[in-house]
Length: 261
Ligand code: DGL
Image 1 (cartoon, rainbow, N blue to C red):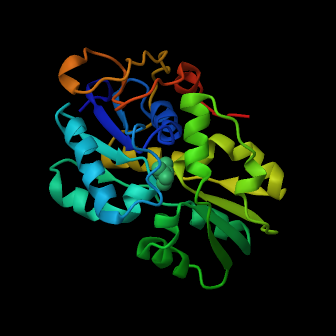
Image 2: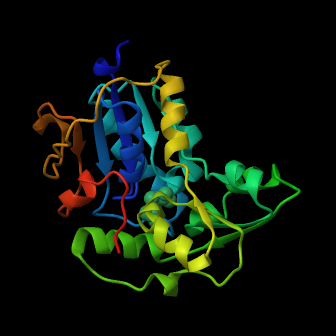
């Protein structure tokens, strides 16, 4: 399959996966992307696992109806809760997010992972952390940070980042939630250390899964749709947003490296 024929779906509870979308567009500029952000029900991070899985199925069904060749759970929480179930449910490959612990552990000893409560307590993250027994890795839930970022980007509500960050002196911070990438620079400044996220790693994984090499296309401007309820209503486009409610901030869409402060 040629890159221009590829259709990829991305799912997130809201805006966080746009950071993954940006990375995937850099890797596959000629592909068509469908983005489902369930921003009417974000954040997911403290919801029961069964409820999260039910919401993810709704979004993934909408993406499947678009005929995607692969889908990305551009949400660590959804990945932690139901990546395996989604792989069993759909015939196309379903990629999940993996917090970038490996690159952080290759460089540093003292590592802080920030995540939503559901991700922080997950078996999946515990298994990942256990792969690096020689490192001092602390997992901290930031229960309200994803919601604050979502509210900032969809409703313009301001918040103080430092109130959401646990005190620590890490050598490296791993972002275990795709929403947090919007504050990547500020988190790096707060802790005075390097910050890692999984967006580019996921985009590389997507290229491998689709068996495509590096692209020689340039990145086209993004033409986001208005939030719509069903994929029947949409026409052709490079990236299409299926929000349940709310208005997306176009600047968020169009920034490749996002920062909200
Ligand atoms: N962006 C998501 C994640 O990576 C979800 C955050 C949330 O909805 O709480 O976990």
